[in-house]
Image (cartoon, rainbow, N blue to C red):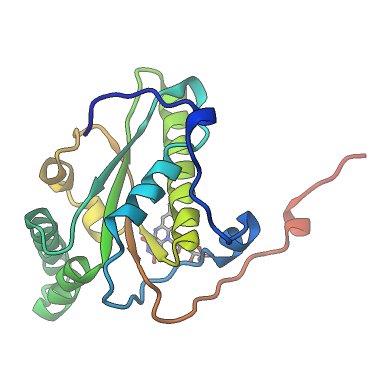
Length: 201
Ligand SMILES: Cc1cc2nc3c(=O)[nH]c(=O)nc-3n(C[C@H](O)[C@H](O)[C@H](O)COP(=O)(O)O)c2cc1C
């Protein structure tokens, strides 16, 4: 983690992109089929820079990000956790290997935590803000020509993950973000907004 800096929104230059906000929102579909291309560090940095401008009640700076570079030692350690987790549950070396390989192969992999507060309501707000940060990051990914898969499965539940990454044991896991260039289009469904909205006039 770098030294604490205070940024002012008015002084931050936004990256230029031809992707509109609505295009990013509708283009951000969960996708975990990636080409081998590793996203540029600069692109990931821009996405993280976008993440931290999520709404944040009381400006608590509640998000923590761990970027695990492909081929790095930390990636290998977390991949081993994935293996152990699945092997323990399934007893299958094949399944466990697949899970380990998924961690090793991800073009980019970011773990996100939110930090708690002494007050339960602020802990909840912090988690909400960290989720908004993930959404910012994933929308920025679309602008970078990338796609992501937000996962709260497997390694994210491993009791040794926090210690392996250097996170505090009481931090809340927000998710693992597998990110890369999509190798296939992805689609999803929603109920119409009208189905879940009441307009009182
Ligand atoms: C908090 C959260 C956790 C998620 N965890 C998983 C997960 O563990 N595995 C998974 O396949 N997708 C996970 N997803 C992605 C959802 O499955 C995905 O958003 C959903 O299928 C709708 O697809 P869309 O985002 O492309 O519209 C998660 C999404 C959120 C917001």
